Length: 240
Image (cartoon, rainbow, N blue to C red; front, side, top):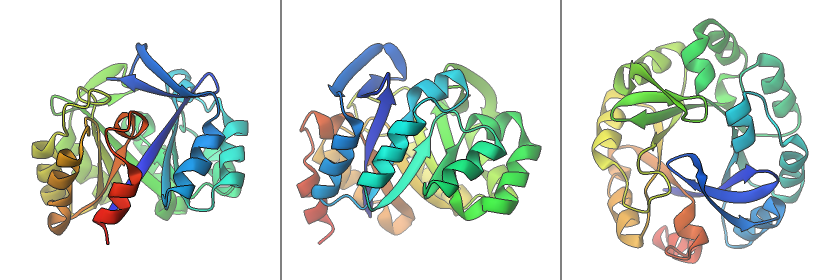
């Protein structure tokens, strides 16, 4: 199972929000590039990078910072936040970003989503951001009436191969992941699934690890790593 450190960028800093709310922001570093180097030194083979300002504004806002992370880090980078245009997708792929996370675009513009998937399907990850079983979009500011499980089935039919499932209500709370919805989506989708949101302890990690045989590919971890509630070295040891 792959454990992926999160680097969320806002105003040029590495931050963590609680439930996606700016007013509940904690700054962990003034240098996201340094954090990328740190996670690489600790053994992380993949990074989850989010341009939070891009997610809120609808277009990427930290391209220079992302480029610096790409230059400094030699593993897989998955990037989300404001990626809602084919041109942006192709520019980021050209700059060496391995995986691009689409969420809002997949809800609002299925036609453009299909076009992107047809050309760059292997580079795309679908963001399944959930509030009480419904899809949230626009930096989690808007909750739609789209059922998460049905939406995942639609994405699979369009050619999506990987998805990240995040319980927005738990994100940044350290209160534990929403394993019930994760299990259902793994079962219904048959896709490569990563979980995110609420992971706060090694006990949570053990519960997540137990789902590996059911098809859970990995977990994205943010605040618990930055607070030292979870040490990345322990995650590496868990896979040995």
